[in-house]
Amino acid sequence: QVQLVESGGGLVQAGGSLRLSCAASGSMFNFNTMGWYRQTPGKQRELVADITIGAITRYADSVKGRFTISRDNAKNTVYLQMNSLKPEDTAVYYCNVQRTVLWDDYWGQGTQVTVSS
Image (tube, rainbow, N blue to C red; front, top):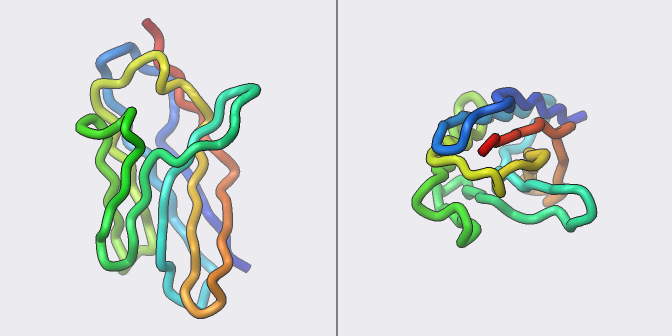
């Protein structure tokens, strides 16, 4: 069974930085796309950024130029470096990974990011 362990959330002042990590384990297949989504109360979960096994990245317009996604395929870990954080970045951030071969996907438990003004 695939397990995802997220870390790195917390409270930060506006303009500050945080780095999220998500380590995946328990799969005999590679992970194709690994990414981060976020959700606030009453709103749908939205894509923040994702990265394919070939290092193709995609970002939400609201985070372009401030967030950077990366991955370490040897460690099955995806990172999200978040700089110049704004109060509107406050949300629960969820890791998502998609496996090759079976093309199923899994979600992490979520980590809270709070940006104070």
